[in-house]
Image (tube, rainbow, N blue to C red):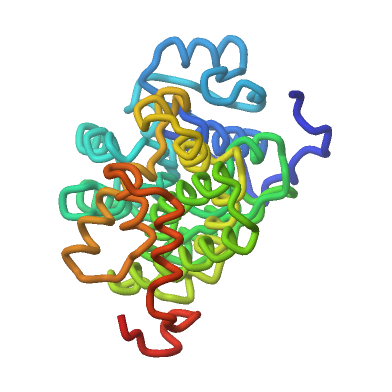
Amino acid sequence: MPEKQTPGPAAPAFQQQQVAVLGGGSFGSAIAKVLAENGHTVHFWMRDEQQVAEIREQGTNTRYMPDARFSGDVRPTTDFAAAVGDADTVFVAIPSKAFRSVITRYAGEFHEGQVVISLTKGIERQGFKLMSEILQEEIPKSRIGVLSGPNLAAEIVQRDFTATVIAAKDPEVRRRVQTLLGCEYLRVYANVDVYGVELAGALKNIYAIIAGLAAALEVGENAKAMLVTRGLAEMSRFAVSMGANPMTFLGLAGVGDLMVTCTSSKSRNFRIGYALGRGAKLADAVRQLGQVAEGIYTLELVKEKSDDTGVYMPLAQGLYDVIYGDASISSVIGGLMAAAQNSDVEFILPRTL
């Protein structure tokens, strides 16, 4: 499908910047495309020589973004040092399972004061670490931030109106990312709750799988709304127990991201859930998708952590039982209906269960 014929992005508010994007998947490709069209030089690192050659010679990345064409100054490379060496800002879109190994291997290539922004929505099993925490451990002299929100890559490359969140403690980091990425179709809002924004982006993948299951089984609209809003309550309950700000979950990184991933067939996790609801085995559903669905991995980690901490998470527990046991989505909904009728919005009334 051709790109929408909309006016080009607004001119950058400052001179052309040298930026790096690490990871040639769908979201890394989308961010590289935005940055290049905003007039910046984009050093686009990936491990696959064929991918590099295709982007360099044809301006396409057919494996991950078959409908998109790169324009502007995009410089694909497999040379990590060359990609980050001259970049003032680095966007990291490496899958969570490989995130630490890549950053550790190349930690010496980052330089002091460099802004490094994680685009990856995931959790590391050892120590239940988020990607920003890995960056802080491995490249502590860099200035760290997180980008998250209701950001389907396929819509960004089509220049559909989109909003995202940059979370960082350093106001200069927030301002820089807003300036680099902001254009007429992409609006960048700011937040200081790095942990909450990042954890919301990882947790919502669990509930997108549940929503996909429910859609496949054609549950009623009332039930879908119940699952999404109880999912939001469950996410915020868990995140606050880990130190996040509950207000973060009322914004783009919380309810916004949850809404898009729980309602769109463009969401990888929704599609996994839908396939499972139609009777597919997990391995077959993942193979058919052809890309990483972080929600399956995140589910295991969150289930372990909630068991350890005693946080009440009936939906996550129910999904775990569906995937790894013999439960059905109907039984999960039934469990919700049979549970104590507690407070609607978390943190307003005390929880009795």
